[in-house]
Image (cartoon, rainbow, N blue to C red; front, side, top):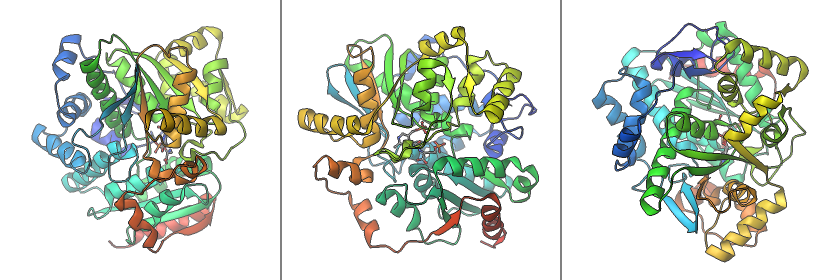
Length: 466
Ligand SMILES: Cc1ncc(COP(=O)(O)O)c(C=O)c1O
Ligand SMILES: N[C@@H](CCOP(=O)(O)O)C(=O)O
């Protein structure tokens, strides 16, 4: 299996080089040259596997022998051994035709752990095997940061710097990231939004001399390994629901911000999983909803919402989807991305828009609708949704398929977002792992959203001895 850039200017590379490169050196995103197709009989045989066994099967298509079988299995088992649920990502039936896929049983109570426990172990494995230095630079709207730190902390030869938008993450998210007292971990709270952080890290990665000199690696979903590990749970959910009821195609509603999680579902579909509609559930930052409805991709005004992790305007993985929408034509992608840079928007014609609407449905959930959905589900089913999952459920309810079977991805535990839960007049008890954070000192530096300022701090962190 070889990997190429969506913009076409990177020579084919293998899996491990793809993980290490993160953002493609031509500014694009790395994708497999050819998506493997899993035949129906093989899918049938996969349906009885445990989560770990299934992860091994799916991930091996992409690793393609670069990691020996026993070592890859060990990596996977170690990554999911930290989850609190034996099924790793269990599926719960909430009501007729409606399931949630609980992705929050990992160490930091968000879906990011599914991929970042794996990526943390993978980086550690690569560092040991090849001796390369792993200096991680990432941006977060709240969940990726904590999960990435948890995935790599204490691992020899790895240092990490995370940018988060100061004052725009939940209290628990901030504590999870900033109570880690470790000289290899640097939390920078930037005066700006997540989009500022994501833009800065992409610009720093684009300085190839700096990237190489300081061995910068990515943990955001620009790294293909993130998408790959997230693909597994779509398969797992399909097989669990198929055990309960007869389904042909299964729909998924996905709380969406950076378009990584839903792109993993799109990839699963292209691999042969019988996926029906993929519902893009956004909050009031609804650039993706507008694109799917009108074919215009143009950032709007930033809104602070009850689902802060999805307060994102420019969705990183949108470029990966564009690549497939444009028939895997890198020059067409380059042209549109250049247009986005110069004009601030991308517009697709009617024919492409029809294809987009075959692949996706979309709904942008208003703040009040998000809270109301939490209240209604709690009252009717006694199930407490976190505000991101609530957007997913609300989008499913609004979609044209309320009578078809749908799985909503439950991307976080409600304890991470008590600000919203309190507004619903619901009292919750924090899990012990979260409760104990409130007594710890915090370690963070507030900085301007400025490339040079951040590069200066990176140099200091990444030049220090471990
Ligand atoms: C809790 C939660 N839900 C949903 C999302 C959106 O996922 P994605 O950015 O992959 O679209 C995020 C952040 O990415 C998140 O942290
Ligand atoms: N919601 C994310 C934003 C970053 O997304 P990623 O999937 O690209 O890491 C977060 O919680 O940080």
